Amino acid sequence: MHAKLLRLSAAALTCWACGTDPTPARDGGAGSDSGRIPGADAGTAADAAPRGDAGPAPEGTGRAYYTLGDDVFRIEAREGATPEDVSAALDRLGPGTRDRWITASPSGAYLVLSADRGGCGGECLVRVRGDLTGLEAVRPDDTELYVEGTPAVSNDGDTIVYSAKGGQHEVDLFLTRRVGGQWSTPLMLTRASGYAYNNMPALDRDGSRVVFDCGQNPYPEDGANDACEVGLDGTGFARLVGPSTLPGAREDKVQNPHRGLDGLLFEASWPIDGQTPETIWLLPSAGGAPQPIGRTFSNAVSPCPLGDGRFVFLWLSRPGNAAGLHELALAARDGTIITTLTPGVDVADIGLGCSD
Image (cartoon, rainbow, N blue to C red):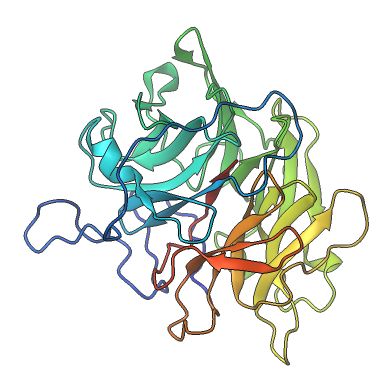
């Protein structure tokens, strides 16, 4: 069983099932262990500019973004790639002791994460350019934002969707835009939701809608969790897929939806070899029933699609991974395994980011 995706405040994340301590000390304390991968590149190579069309990215490009301990990393989506230590690069922009919930715009031009940087009084939402410059805390009305899960950011960096308390429900989605150098008063997007918890937003590639976890319990694995969508003006709320649409699903939940080139990717369960581990599903954009695109590999969670149709995910059952670590892996458009990007590394199962 993989670690629960925890919907907790920015002050208290506990990953009790990750297999390693998720919050080691950072930089220089007595007995500190930064949790950073030995040999990880802390460079600042610039990301590609946004594409002017909605077509697929060139095959073989793309990056994945993930959390490990108190640090965040990114890695190219290719065999043999070396992780880049984003936290180490951000240290050059200002001090910090904790980074997590990192993701990127579809183009990779901007990143957003939760961090105690940028002058935040605690851990708050920050935005940074894809070349790892220009870090700023997102402060609408001069107020720090404390997020409940992975946020989302547009290609131009001026639209951010995030989950937080303080709305109509236990957790809601909010949107803020950067206009004239100022962040707008947050707009609650999930006013029409019938779910208590609305979390883990992921923008569509055209930036018109956001898909997200919508559930009745604080932990999706406790059940009653679906995948929903809403427009960036708060209209058009809809349930996209839920456990009732899946044949033979073990648990009454789906989780971590992201819309990719071929449709909506998400995690749920599927009978494999007499067991029912979680795997990756695809709800085709062309219509039809959800398909277990990851049925040939078990214990797979947190899918995130790349611009060419491939996707990254966390895989607990790679041959040789007897400890069940959450290794970051890469699959082809048809669900065929390509490679394991972080062999032997237990990535935090709190959401992945990806970009072209």
